[in-house]
Amino acid sequence: MFKVKATVVGFGKDESKGPCHFRYKVGDEIIFDGETIAGRLCPNMLPQFGKAFRDLFASGGRHKEGEIPAGYYPFFHSPQSVYDPAYKKYDGVGFRPTLERPEEGYKFVADETLFDTPPGGKFIIGKGTEKRDFALVCGDNHTLVQFKLEAFDLADRGDALPYYRRSMTILGKVSGKPGIAMDKIINEYTKDERDNIYPSLGQRMVAIIVGELELLDFVDVKNDKVTITDKGKKKLASFIKTLTSEEKKALKL
Image 1 (tube, rainbow, N blue to C red):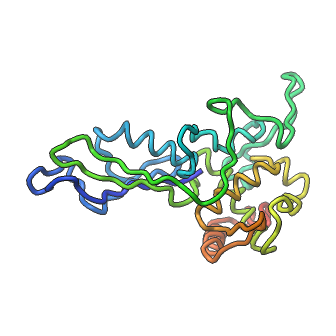
Image 2: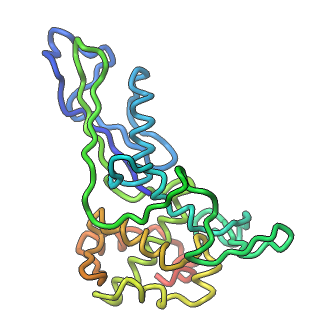
Image 3: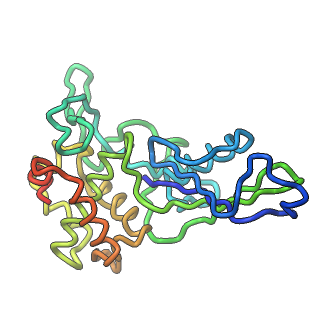
């Protein structure tokens, strides 16, 4: 899941003759981090921003024509959970996976059990670095303010935080073994680390997370071999600096 940025890039008409009444200027930015929005939001653009932010948050722009962006969410491959503050040192929030709920006839099997039904009944495991360009134009035809929208980082707030932390631990495993086969990354975790830290890991979850890391150039993937990039090394180092000693020990970073 991704942080999204909207940037004012220009005006379709002479802004000096038909000024933007919200006083947007070229270079103004609006950022959605998965939980909060920073920046000035013109109310007339809210419906357009809302849909674009949601779609880019989900897929990073990888969704093709006809695909439902939310089908990219790793959420659907996660187990059910309960809130347990003792687990906050792992996922940053405090979710404890409940892999079995006998009273509900529920059992989580990695790569098989979906948490819920994906939108449209289809889930997508995004790979590659191709993404759609997003542009929005204000409906005021006197000015036609133009916006560029892009996914520029991993979302690290709200319910995206546990997935962000899993991404960083995977980045750490890849850093220690450059060129590791994607289907071998999961072997770098103990069974307890795979199952009992939210989100639990299966091969699909690993592939989804690696796909997000690749889209942002944090890793390079060739022939299903994964190598951390210089940008990824900086990202990992920056993340580690935010952790307490207890969190570093819990996450083995």
